[in-house]
Image (cartoon, rainbow, N blue to C red; front, side, top):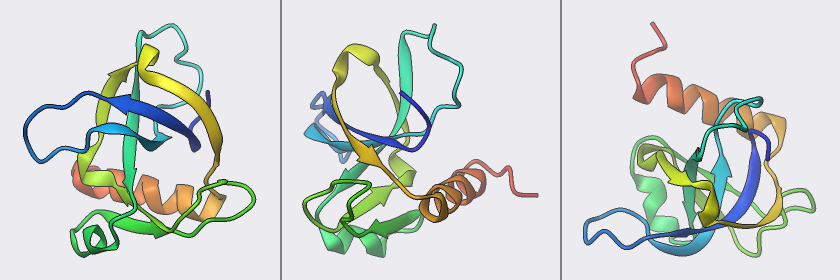
Length: 113
């Protein structure tokens, strides 16, 4: 499990506006933290309207990410999940999208100053 990998994950229902259910998500935790029981993820959605929110970007399917449909990375929904919720690895995002993801994370956490 490496930063930029895309996994199917089972996100528990919380009753709010958070993403839930079985869905693809990007691993955003730095490599080398395998001993932690949790992992940081950014969930994906196929709802293109979600791209209207700040801190999102679109990922088009390709042979590396193996997504079935255009997906929106919901960076503003960054969360930690138990590693037991990871199902199977689908693919990886490209370096350009990984850079965009990291920039969004810096901005949303106020680390870009």
